[in-house]
Image 1 (cartoon, one colour):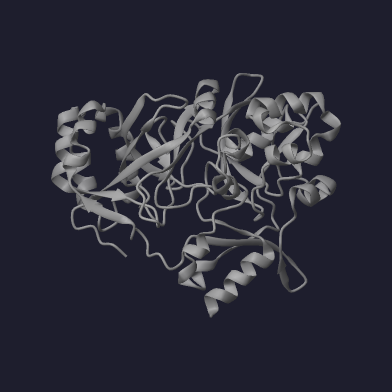
Image 2 (cartoon, rainbow, N blue to C red):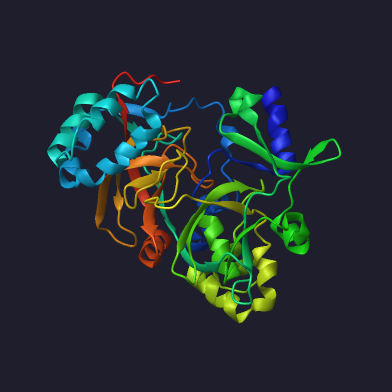
Length: 406
């Protein structure tokens, strides 16, 4: 009964989102063309995590034999995954199930592919991930870290702000009240003695004094800033050449809605022409209409400046993710930090892509037992690969022998 009550509150406030949502929120703008109706609807809002409350964590992992992926592992350059695995250990080394394997991993110095394979075979069991309908294939998309020109001060050239979290934004971890709602947060603001939904994108655009003083950086293009929110992290390059990494800090609690879908519904773009680039082109031709369609997405992501020298954006584990070796997963079904073997294809290709990856991130649109978001890295090449990646894939999860399931 109490779970039903909390679900009602979540629906009423329309403010349910995923805990640890540090990078990709949703790839709908780039993916809307190729999505099935069901997938499109999933991209229209955060996954219905609470509806999966009856599924126990990691319960869709099925123990299997290493022979299933032995030949594929032999083709992978496992040494490229090892630094990412050691970063997982930075976050896992004090957890009981992971202590021993992380200690042994850190004792290996520049191991060869064969040594890495032997390490995992000796100390891990293999599990295949499945969906709640028992199927073994799921959706694989991609994300990346964009680079934007920007400034620390507002100017005619740099007039679009990236905001840090406002002081009046309240975040409630629902699992502290109801353990059944693990990984769920409620966001809002206090008015009188009530917690009410926080302002939408449209409301903040009309009353910017609500977040005045929370400008973190300024960028050139509002559409680029919009897509930066979707990716959840990026690099701001100043005129001096200095580069500043920004990462997800919080979110206003409203669900993501697709700007691309709004443009289709209003007849501004045809369904077969919607992509990140076509939206940018449309925006340049229709500056007076732009804010209306930006407002179609009530969700606003707030950023923070990351420390200098990080090799990549921080994932949900708090460690940097690694280009082409880190993935975002649904943490209810795959433990964060775990090595995972992904079998899929390269974007827009039938060329096999079989690699050992690390589950180091989460995302608002990444929900289900077999659902992967592949981190491609930084810049234009990564953006093109991420934007065109939408295919089926299979996933195996490596867990230490004796891993204690919840």
